[in-house]
Image 1 (cartoon, chains in turn purple, cyan):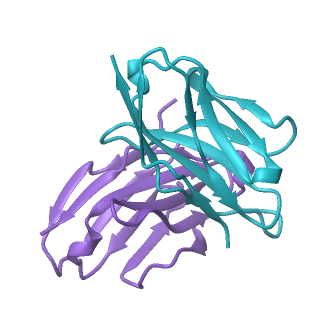
Image 2: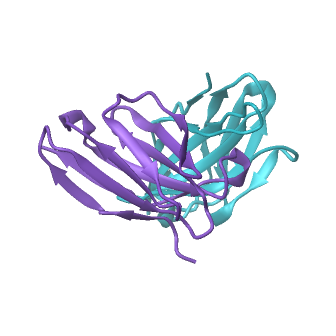
Length: 114
Length: 116
């Protein structure tokens, strides 16, 4: 059974550009969450999608957005990139948006903003 | 709001020694608690989780954790550490509201170094 797949693994972008990251959940998983990991702030929740609807959102500016498709794959977009957006972005999938179902994380996309 | 504290930023142990990583949480109701491990450049792997019932939970790779409500703690233990256990360990709490919880709050992590 394939795990959570995130693409690309590494990305370098310039300040002011925008970027789109992709996450394919485990087959059968319909809930996808996104987390940002930085040395300074640690792991922070970005948002969660279930059935193509955003169900929960963390404390991030509107430059961070996402969506989920009918096949449960999800994308997150960051517009007008800032140096501080450099981070490891982790996607996690779950059967449903309930904590007791557990989350499986992907290996992440390492974004570097220069 | 919930929070998680991992008091030890870095721990060094010798291979074969026992290990205990500390985790304290703050949450008003019964928490859902997790321990994850992250190797360099990798995502998070779930070691174990506590939802209810027996307060001593067993996980993968020989890890266990004990939930102590009176101390608001969920410490991770392993009787004998292997060199491959060197990694960063994260404790997390998931809050439940209105029947479902939709995010994890993580501690800042504990970096484990294993000496040969």
